[in-house]
Amino acid sequence: GWTTADWLSEKRVGYWGDIDTWGLTFLAQARNNLPHLKALMMDSQIFAGHRDAAVVEPVPAPATPPAELTESERDLYRQLLALPQGRLEQEFIDSETVRNAIVRFRR
Image 1: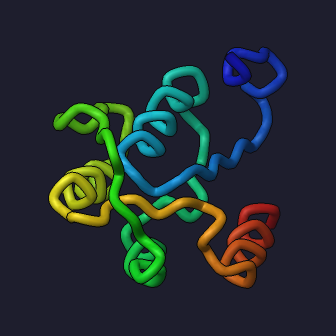
Image 2 (image 1 turned 30 degrees about the vertical axis):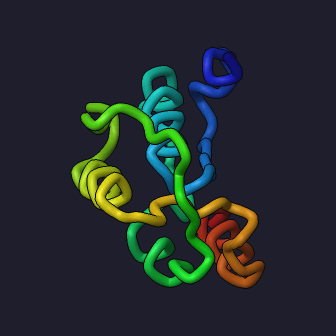
């Protein structure tokens, strides 16, 4: 429900969630209300750089990626479904990567 707040429609909004099919599904749902929303650290490069911390996603989201994802996010979604360990929880992304992404977003 937070994405329906009127004041957000005129703000820059960043979104950061787990890199798994549900995290990407939630990103897509947020984009329904905030099409200008920018995903932070939810891409294949971040996943690849932290793949050693990836775990099994016990119950993946549906096989078809949501339409509100970008093409590269849909590719990542499909990739995650095919991997035995297709879930990277956001707390396992190193703090320097997080800091740099937030600093870049704030600029």
